[in-house]
Image 1: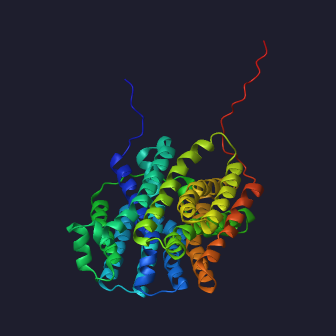
Image 2: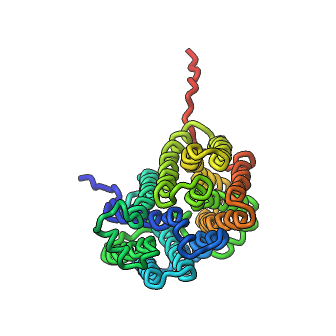
Length: 421
């Protein structure tokens, strides 16, 4: 009598991980939509406005490696519960005491919690869905992530646009917060979502699993050895430049369209941000197909060159061109993260868990580049500030030329093999 040795799949955990991916993206990328309202509400300069994404994304840089060590010491349930508890409290405190400093602290706390969540949920997804399904589930998670990025600007529009909402939840949220700060109601929603997820993650049963080598945080010596490797530093800079470019564009779209084309940030600006994230998601799917037929380095070179062209068009073109070019940028940068990350892992023989932690610290680029754009915009103008993003793109372009992975991405060959008669 045979026995079924197929590993058990935990569909409720897969569903929970997808939900957490959705919430991470939803809260992270709402800042792209509200940035103009925040600037106007607190009467901020471009430099101080640029400090807001800095506060959020620098938390990723600070917490990515410590989160790996925490995941080795504490259970998934405890870390997930504490993360959502802190998210709920931080969001609630801001809605009660709205101000620039409190908002900056709130963003830092949220970013720290997101870093912890990211470290936990990837091994959970592999264990719950089975290793043979991990690639598919990871792509599905990225689609969920992209869907949330696309939808979050529409929640913002729903909450702040008095003309499009007659009563209901939006009116209730506006009544609770200060009349001249309707967007603050979003963080009351986030607090409620975090409380619900806190309850869910506390009640859910978690499978026991063994982490793979590339999911385990290494010891301090492994980090020291990697930091002595020039490839580690170069690929760290690649991730740093990618996230910085992504957020440098996303955070300033609404302000640019308002400042140079007179377009309403709460309607057209929010829509354009949504389309930027939608195209980034669609581009991921196309990228998966292209990686099956061409070398990843060539794809990175092509995508980067086209992105640079569309940045120039977005910044110098007329209104119609800008509205088309900004979402197009999202489409062409979509493949960069996965290519840079995979090239990095394939360029180093060992300590992949520690390397992943170092690379994820590069997410702090999302803190630095929007700040630089804002600072340059303050000194000159926003258009000049956004042209700065061509510099990190230039570095990403160079990766396609100097990367020498130990293993290349597998592609499909369309050449017919000669068969001797």
